[in-house]
Image 1 (cartoon, one colour):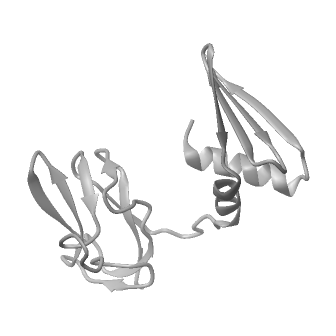
Image 2 (tube, one colour):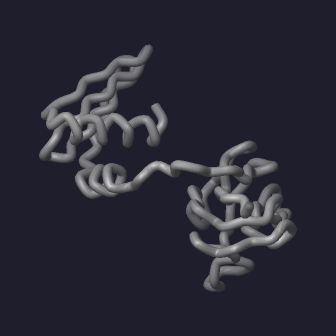
Length: 148
């Protein structure tokens, strides 16, 4: 089950002042309980308990983007790096203006470092990946609101 969907369900739980939400999709069972920050994910016959009080709070407070004109996606599978080298500042941060061709990150794949360049001019409104995170082909790396 996607983290985004779990965050939406946690928000519904809070907005409706519910104490418990139990949802089953196929072989996956999700139980959210208010107060203790307890999340239970059950898949097939195994069960995992995650105590994520702080994570739940962060997910509830985060507002979904209302208008994202363009999602820059990863052209390959690999490890994403937000800066040119370890310890260096990130190429971009939320609120920065970018021009087409500006570097936004690097994706390392098979020992090759591929600079990912902005495909549009605009303002960076979200960077949904973390430095050093493994990314899939087509995963969103940066959200850019195009300038009018």
